[in-house]
Image 1: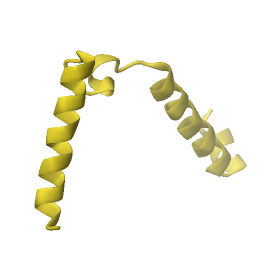
Image 2: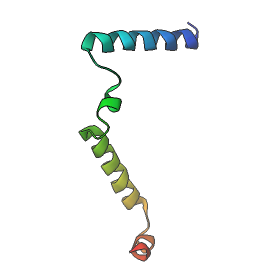
Image 3: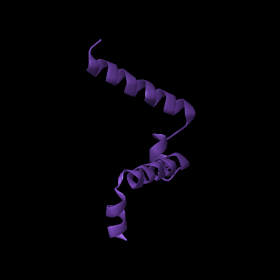
Image 4: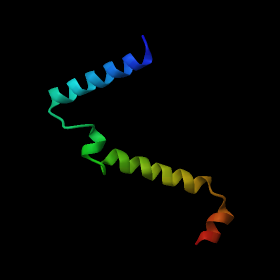
Length: 61
C-alpha cells in the first residue's frame, strides 16, 4: 500500500474513533497540562541534570 494512502486511512479512522467517543480532537489538545506531559518533562529535566558535568552545574549556580 502506498504510504500516502495508508496515512489518509489512518487519519480517517482516527476521526471516526474520535466521533464515536465524542471527543473534539486529540487528547493532548484538550489537556495540555496532563499528568503524562508533566511526568515526561520532569524526566527530561532529571536526565539533563544527570548528563551535565558537576563542575558545569556548580558554575551555573
